[in-house]
Length: 129
Image (cartoon, rainbow, N blue to C red; front, side):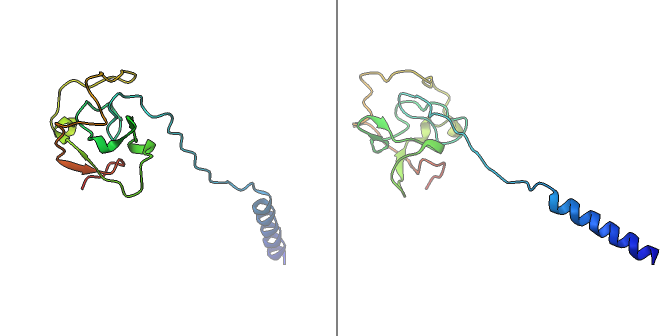
């Protein structure tokens, strides 16, 4: 009988602890921050460095404004635009890159690039096709 009393007390103690224990609420918060201010757009993969003039084709710009890449992408759904991956450091490019906050040169128009020759299609979210 004594064992039964101890068992009942232990069960009551466990029950009271589990009923009064605070519940953990899962909350996910992702802060991306502002998009990099780059004169000709930025690469669509971390660390989101500024891309040089000629990496993105004119379809990546609306009214001279870059439509975004990576977490800041705000272009149309299912969009794929041409890039020239010869200007991508992952493909061996080691030339000059603009810095954040630089301004585009007046001669480097992004809305019309008659000499642009894209060799890859990208969606702005890091996917090539």
